[in-house]
Length: 331
Image (cartoon, rainbow, N blue to C red):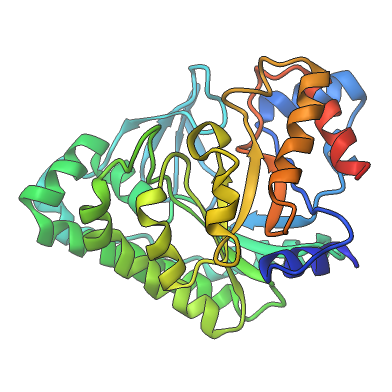
């Protein structure tokens, strides 16, 4: 089996000769790994997926402040250099929700990114991405607290804003589907340490029908659907299965417990399992090796893309990454 075939078999709950894995890093952690192991450490990994984000790079407006293509300004002067925190949501007035016009899709940029994916994929599973695909995009525009209040006080405005976002996403998906891809990845954090940020009722009212529309476009083209959400989304896992999700990332063992593997087996495959919150920053290399083996053993029937539960942050000792990768590479 090559790497692409292993991922497809995993998504279909078929046995593979090797548990596929994917390891990614924040910029800070990648710098640490390169300093510890030599340059271009990432290229030495036997990662089974390759992805590109179809969102434009942010533009620095002043030192440490960056504006994305939606006009949201991000402050990256703090500890988080990769994402940062929203400094200024553009839609300060609730009346702006129904009037909001999303930026035009830059088709040339999307095609450039898709060609980059094609050129570097090799035998890996090809996965274009839209990060901040729905709820996250809306709250960055409006502000988290404001959007959650709007769901109760101005539901029609929220529906209008989300419709604008999803219609833009669908245009991007249409372009991506012209290429030889294997699936599509949607990033959208819905969970917190326990339960959903907006609760299951609001998720089903505002988010589910629009995710279903995007999932359907991908599934109708014969491709796989991958969804990222940090946190605890057990309340809606059946909903995600119902609307066509194939692979859920990220599986946080400190939230779900490894026994959750039995509950989702045959429905939704899992990506993750090695905790960046609880284990990788704090345990010894030998403990990390044991944890990595335990995660793979919990999914002994299949349905696992192993890896850290998120892009590895900069507080992880490089020795722990090397311990994890050693186990992943020597199955």
